[in-house]
Length: 265
Image (cartoon, rainbow, N blue to C red; front, side, top):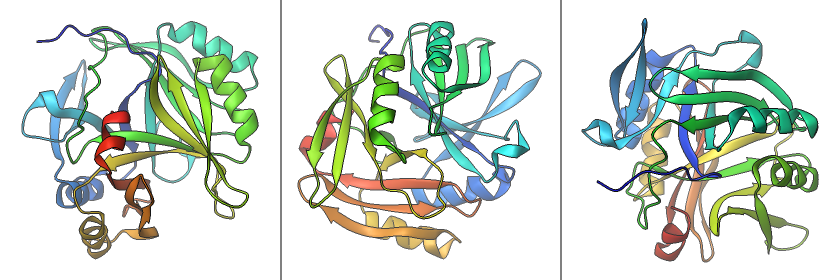
């Protein structure tokens, strides 16, 4: 077994917050092949998502929203940091908010929840056992990318550089459109775009690797999902689409080109 170490800037966990896990679990089991595994955590049980048959394939979990004011169901991403308390303070000092102050997760590590100045929410995590090593090839059914959709990319980039230490580079995506790649430690970890539909709040959008985006979207639609973006090709990157599950949470799926898959583990 390889030794685990902290990988600051890596998105290491993804959690679906919904009041209707009974609807979400069979949906994702059918659409993405995910398994649900009960995981004891003190006086409660956490419903963990596994991409395979064993617990070493765990990629996220299901959770009930802690505050009803947060609105519809959503995916919340956890990013690895070396000092949760220091990052939470930095987020507040740079115009963000601390939605949940630092706290201990027994047997797991330390966490907190923040929002950037535009309102996109993110959880911080210091894993007591270190983070899973980067993989060159991410198997189908697992998260491999995370994308910030924001109303102000310039301010967002400055915030994440100061708070989380992300550097960035820009990609010309055609007339009037720029995509930004977030990196840390020489590894690309996510992207930033100003693509927001009318009335949509800034948010992080996780991506799941799938072998056939069209078939995945077709299954999702039959099981009650809405499709904000039908599958389409991004030249040099891959084929992707966006689905909104029956509980209302949005998730992107993509079949990345092999070179991009290696780069974005």
